[in-house]
Length: 150
Picture 1: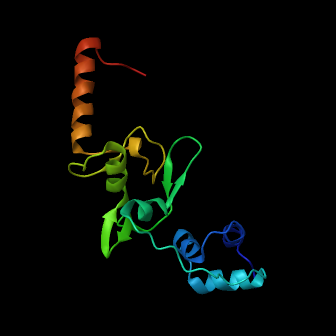
Picture 2 (picture 1 turned 90 degrees about the vertical axis):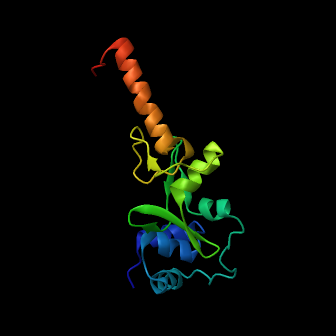
């Protein structure tokens, strides 16, 4: 059997099989056969079941060196999602609430200044109120200092 390097690296790092399946979009049998071909023992613990929405959110996040947080979990129509207590929750809304201490208003998006595609870092997500405030501030800045050219 040909061993996929991306699966092998995650298995050696101790990533649970279910997470490998979700991250790499592969069947559980593919991960199991890779594990067996590598001579690794079968998993002995049950998958981690989070007890809070925050824990469910955090199990799919991967902090980066530059302060961003990449999403490694499931996606629904392009939006990172978390299933907790039988309900779908959108990861950016959770990140917003955890960072800002309030529920977001309207749609939550990644800030235009963030270069990480699936970033769910609190400072990198914006709701309707923040976007409107930024737009107002940009207009006020332009009125005071004129248009800035790069």
